[in-house]
Length: 195
Image (cartoon, rainbow, N blue to C red; front, side, top):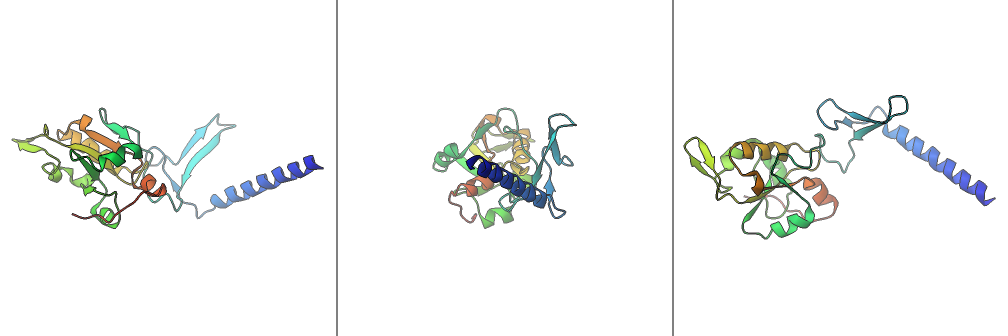
């Protein structure tokens, strides 16, 4: 009798799971890209018996984009929350929110400054660099802990690569890939951005 109950429970769970999966695959589902634009799926296994992995926008997902590499450029260091928290008190470090200013003003990580990824060159002096002819000299540049909206956000990786192309030392850049998505999901304090 116990075995029959277990089998019935398993069947019920499978039916519920199938119904939920079918519901999530309805026409209203918003599928998002995985690794680059126009790449919404990834197949695991062979074509005949493969499983299609895709991203679906969920309320906690917060943003569009596609999965970013752990290291956006050679020489940059990946950091998590355990490294971010002490950096908030480090006088030789700047916490850099590379999202757009309107996102920064809504909520950000405490002590962060706004350096929008499309406008990094106009902030080079603020980051400790000096203009030398047509080049930037960043010998006195601070350690930068850069972030945006999370693992699928392209803003901080683009901004980081731009900083490096302008002469900022990659070894002074720390990439918080979790960004606002992970920071808020694990319940860490957020503040309104301020200049």
